Structure formats: structure tokens, C-alpha cells
Amino acid sequence: MVLQLYGSPQATCTKRVGALLYEKQIPYEFHEIDFTVNEHKSPAYLEKQPFGQIPYIVDDGFVLFESRAICRYLSLKYADKGPKLIPDASNSKAAALFEQGASIEQANFDAFAAKAVFENLFKKMHGLTPDTEVFNSLITQLDSKLKAYEVILGKQKYIGGDEFTLADLFHLPYGALLAPAGSDVLSKQGPNVTRWWNEISSRPAWKAIEGGVPLKPAF
Image (cartoon, rainbow, N blue to C red; front, side, top):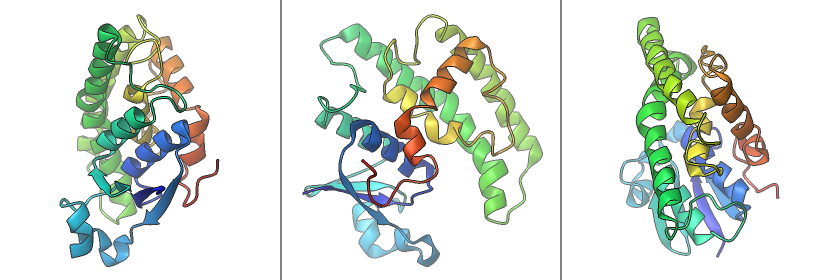
């Protein structure tokens, strides 16, 4: 049975999974969740995703939520399809660098980028008033973290080692929204961050879903 993806085409975490599906070219059926009627809070939805968040998948009866967990699961299941996005456990050093990179993204990038995008972009989309002081503070903190990225990326090609992995892919949904949110923090870094960001954000898989995960795969 083909993979079932439940989410919103424009949602950042759905796009994270979408980028993985396109990197691996995994067939899927997309089920768009209707937020206007609070479908994500309905009893039927909460049976699958008890937090009432998106996305989740159903893979031949197996239900899984949390976008990073979904990406890891599918990367492992389809390890021989498309690029290898998680190093083999047998290569302990490569695996450790990947885990380090994945932790860096969640603790030192997403923790600031996601909140900044919410503050100055998502609030406006929902008719709320952004707090400029909060936004600027988050961007300042993110800028400081990216200085460390510059050092790391001067020693290795990607944030999780010398090969493109999920640690890089995880950055894409919120990283791509920083400029629309009003920040040039990614574009004003040193040459290593610039090279890295330009490369990962230009990948065909990301370009295919950046504007929204297609309801039907385009591959």
C-alpha cells in the first residue's frame, strides 16, 4: 500500500517530510488537513496524532508523527533508494557526526529560526501584531549560532559531515522563510555558510516542494 501523508501543503513540518519524499522519490498519497474546521483537533485525527499537530504518516498500517522522526524512518526504510541521508551505523564516526549535526539543527538553528519566523511572518498571516524586539533578539541569537556554523563548515562540507544528510535537510523549511520574515541573517554570513546554504536550498527536491507539497507526486 502506498504511503499516506496527512498534513498541510504549506506547513513547514509537512515540507520537511515532502523534501525527504522527493529526495528519495517515495510514492505517496497526500491528505490535506482542513484547519478552517479544526480537522486536526477532531477525535478521529487525535486518534492518530494525540497532540493535534501535522504531519503524520500511515505506512501499511504503521502510524508515525513528528517530521524528523518520519524522515529518519523513511530514510532507513528506503536506505538504498536515492541519496543515503543517514550514514550506516557501521561507520561509527560518520554516524556520530550526523547525530551531532542533527542535534545542532534542533538546538542551535530551529530553536531560534522557527520562533523568529512565527513572530514576524506567521503572526502577520493570522492578523496578529509581531513584537519587533522579540524578533530582533531571536535573529541576533541565531546570527551568533551561525558564526559557529561558519567554523564547522570550514572543516566539513555539510553540517553533519562531508555528505548531504537529514541534518542539512532539516534546516530547509524554516531557513527558507527567514528572508520572507524580514531577516538577511543567512545571506550575510561568511563564505562557508553561504556556500552551504546556497547548495542545500538549491537541491531539486527542495525546489519541487518549496512552494507547497504537491497533492500528487511530480516524479
